[in-house]
Amino acid sequence: MADRAILNTDIRKGTINKNIYGHFSEHLGRCIYEGIWVGEDSPIPNTNGIRNDVVKALKEIQIPVLRWPGGCFADEYHWKDGIGDREARKRMINTHWGGTVENNHFGTHEFMELCEMLECEPYINGNVGSGTVQEMSEWVEYLTFGGVSPMSELRQQNGHQEPWTVTYFGVGNENWGCGGNMRPEYYADLYRQYQTYVRNYGENRIHRIACGPNVDDYHWMEVLMREATRFMDSITLHYYTIPGPAWENKGAATGFETSEWFSTLEKAIRMDELITKHGFIMDKYDPDKRVGLIVDEWGTWYDVEPGTNPGFLYQQNTIRDALVAGVTLNIFHKHSDRVRMANIAQTINVLQAVILTEGEKMLLTPTYHVFNMFKVHQDAELLDLTIDSGTYSFEGSEIPEVSASASVTDAGIIHVSLCNLNHAASATVPLELRGLSGQKVEVTGTTLTGNKIDAHNTFSQPDAVVPQAFTAFTLEGDLLNVELAPMSVTVLEITPK
Ligand code: AHR
Image 1 (cartoon, protein in one colour):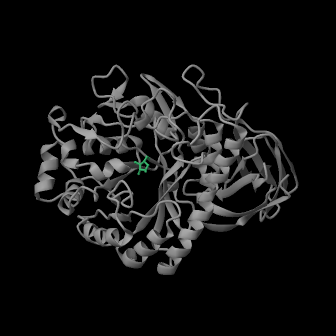
Image 2: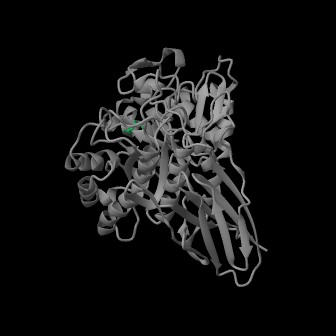
Image 3: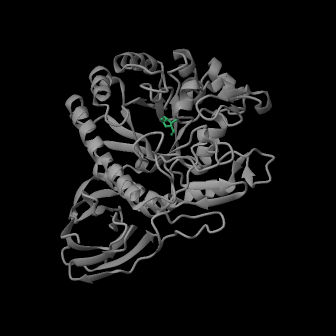
């Protein structure tokens, strides 16, 4: 039982940047190839090689920004291998992810066309680990320079006359690990050097993104902020939710125990602590919060589906993942003064995917449905919401039972997203609506839940876990009494009349 929740509908706490709803697609497993790119000659319906069904589904959730080409792949990617006549493009080994042959058929032009189809912003991640300053500099020139220059001419020869607009550019990925195993002092200097040549051409203004820490590496954040704050617009954070005790034993995506349900959610809500603590360090060097924190890799990471290539990171997605998505997005809302973008890993067929494909078949995961339900928060104003939640206990450990956040749109429509983390018990939330000055309201809602802790969609049953209309509430004066089903994610829409 949540004791009390108060929503101050007249206290606004800043905009929830729509880019918090961003995605990440790496050349990994079946994310790009099969998931997005099938080629022009494929029997799978496509436009210029890009799957139509996937584009339609991603447009529906209003994907605002897409990060590419990695991930670890970014620091071994040489962009010139992915332009020009497709059949003549170099083949390379994808050493990080399964040792497969990368034929470079999906390159810069194909990615930019995908972003145009999705009407989303591209976020391109450059190569510091094995690339040169010149290579990074020329990529930016190729993409964004409209005048006379070698890279601009090369782009034109490859069929794209006008430069593209590219705002988000990452200078390396995980340079503390797969991106070069660097020390923060060394990377900070390299960052300062590389970003110098990431130029603004014409009207294009690049938002320069430094590689930030892994999980709780506060030293990395300290050094980067100390040495390079004035050269960056944002810095990244990577944090994955791994239920098991070790990389070798992360836990299964389905068929898991109740203890794993609990540990997954316990670990997911750690995102709040990480953002808070990294935020303290950022505040020390950037008290005005000019620099954004971009959580450009987050989500669940389980053992791969039995029988699949271990390097492909393919996993099923259940109502547990929906809860992880819901609580994490609520945390990002709360920190929207600092968190300006986040990119769930990864869009299709990899880790906490929103879409799974099998040949021409496609299914939408429970995580997809949460992104669809929560899209109403994109660019809305965060509202003051306090919730004195009851606790959800399991074998001596406790976490809050309910996670919540609220926002209001330009049109004055209020949305409250509520997650009941408890796998077995429903949760009652008496929500006091303040600041409406006697206005009457109309309330509707949508909810997502499952009939067991690993409820999920399959290609034979793609609608096992889908949103339903939510009616388990009563409104008496200013008090909205909400009854949340066990393991559920709910979004209420409150329209003042
Ligand atoms: O998302 C999978 C991998 O996780 C990314 O390539 C890397 O950046 C991270 O370690």
